[in-house]
Image (cartoon, rainbow, N blue to C red; front, side, top):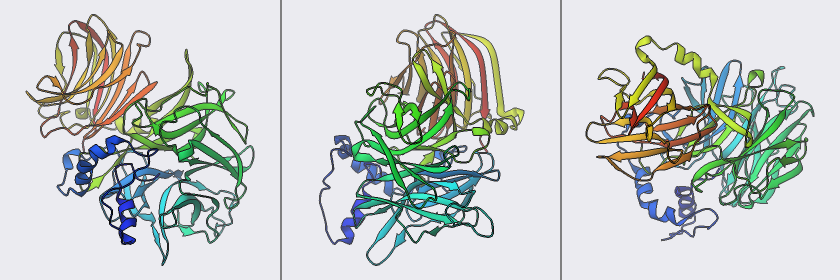
Length: 531
């Protein structure tokens, strides 16, 4: 994807190279809003901040060792190792010099930082930034890039060439397990001569014995599907667009087959697109339908809008390739807010398993923290675990942290409530005595889950709300709070709300609460993942 709308450094760099000084940028209406102008001074200041912020660096979410990151790229699983490539500025803590950073993990929790895998390219008259894309294992060496009988890894990515105002699709290949890549001499492999044409997602269709690419034409609110036998020569199959949410540009698409309710006889295709959330803030939408090898058909009305996440930071998520046992797991980028972090900026979401389930409203996407992570939770010592069952909370607050435990804002919380007479109940996190706290509450009157930052008993800033109905008379929450990120999975992942928090020093308390009545705390489990 291109830079987030408020990070205009790439455009400034182009203008400087041309010797042009501009007092104002002409901002396209399709890409920007008036809000950007209001926030820009603070955001620019945030990018230049150099005060270290270790208190906000996540422990169990991926961040680069230093400097800027955005979209996850080239997610692929090979020989027991999860590879995470990502949009990265190797030189500065702001957007620019876009390259593919690289990290690996064996458990999706602990990551090993590796050198840049695909750096930006500079020649006399051309700058090529390595924008988002995917990576595949070419098992049958269809591309011919393999060596000594070993299958190559092939990266398919968008080459953004700012001087030419052009984006096209390039490929590069690796013969050393994904550490370094060689550019294909015949690039580009797909070029429709457009300024905005990006984010290819490639998968292998075993039944058709061909590669399938899904790629976005952002300003036209559509995706295109291409097929290839060798990853070099691509044929346009069809297009899909103009449906769902078209208020913002479309980016970072992916098309994924999933079994409905775990039944292989009920396969559907999940098409995800990065665009907006219900409030037209940063977010993603999805479509569920059928794909016949050429055309995607939406199973819902064209005007139907389905959203991946209801917060305002989750973006650019793509699934892993080559996972065993048909698993489908994605990672997304948590787009930074204006609050500065240093020496890094940007973080990834928790890896999320993707499921399709039948609901009264139809087939819907469910998300869960990857089951792979359970092994790491199980290994934690008893001092890092807390559990409670069948506790009635009556118009009170029940603290869960102590001076020496569960007090570092790195808690993974799973909780189930049975609503009673209380008007509100839920969790309070990032608490500071007599100061601030964040309330994750459920209103039994409005049937809404809400997230509110509080200061001296009063709401500070916007309140995020999400309509939620009890399931089997219970409200179940999985709450992943990691220093500065908060991911809330509601009722087994039927809905997810993700946001960022920046607690003050010492704001590390957390509790369960009930207001003006009682609630039954059926079960509570907490894991403290602080190192």
